[in-house]
Image: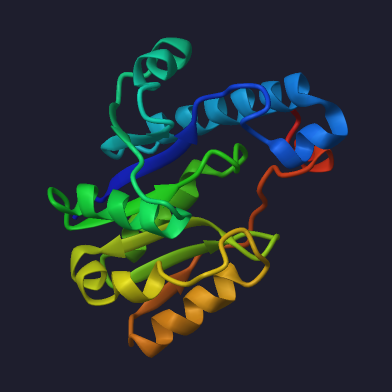
Length: 201
C-alpha cells in the first residue's frame, strides 16, 4: 500500500503569511522565511517517493505558485472555512484514489523525509498516524480510507486549531473512535524568529 502525500501551502504574499512572526521581524523578512519553508518542504515531498498533491490557498493562485516554485505536482485549491474542514476535504480528494493518505504543512522545513516513509509504513497496520509538534499541534497526520470514513467528522470538527491542545484533543477523539493510533517523534514548526534561526533560515 503506497499512500498519497498532500502538502498544504499558501501563496507567499508579504502580510499574508507568517503574520505573527512579521510583527517582530517585518512582513518582507517573514515572507522570505515562509518562501524558504515552502522550498524545503517541496524538496522533502519530492524525496519521499510518494505521489504528491499540493493543496493551495487562495483560490486562483495556482499558476503563480506553480511558476514561483517550479511545481510539477498536481494542485488542488483548499476548500473549507476552518483548517479542519480543509484537511477533511484534502483527505477526501486523496482517498478517492489511494487507500491511505498523509498530510503535512509547510511550517516544518526541517522535517526528515524518513518520518514520511515511516508514517507510510505505520499506516499498513494502523488507522491513524500523528507527528506531534512542540507547540501542541501536529506536523503530520495520516489516515487510511477506512478510518477516514469512520472518524473524519470526529477528528476534524470543533477543535481549536492553532491552540496548544490540538494534538491532545485529536488523540482523545481517536481513542473514543477506537482507532489504532501510532505516533512519530516530536518535531518543531517554524512559527517564531527563534524557530527560523533554529531551522537555519
